[in-house]
Length: 155
Image 1: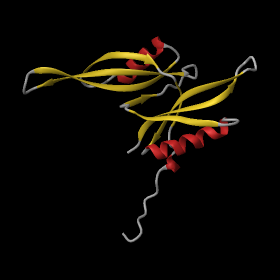
Image 2 (image 1 turned 45 degrees about the vertical axis):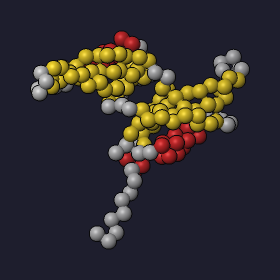
Image 3 (image 1 turned 180 degrees about the horizontal axis):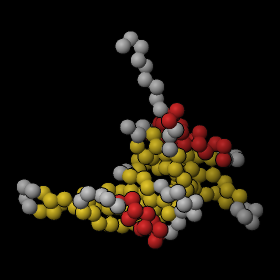
Image 4 (image 1 turned 120 degrees about the vertical axis):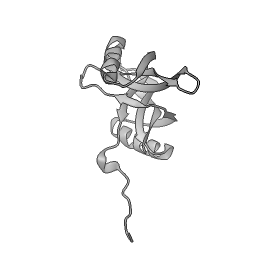
């Protein structure tokens, strides 16, 4: 099962005015381990980098869902925390289970609308706990041919 990993890269970026500035950007990579995440991230970044770059951080991004947008103007990523409300039948009390989701949108209002569209038809009650803009620039999903090949010899 793949998981999402947030990877940070530090590099020298040439600004519009011609000055060079050291910057750190965040990306999301799906992988099965930290090692695979770093390997895939470097492979994805190398074609776009001129000069030296260093992966400064990799951490597990605990996301239950990724809501991508077809709208090309949706160029930012927002993290939404959504609480599902269930009833503990033994105690007769409400229980909130919070999940984090990543939503692609151009601004907060669009993120809220995209979340509502993505959650449309969800069984059960839910509430929005928070929506915040992230520093994630892009996501790198594995391609179907990136799947590990199982060795079925001797079966």
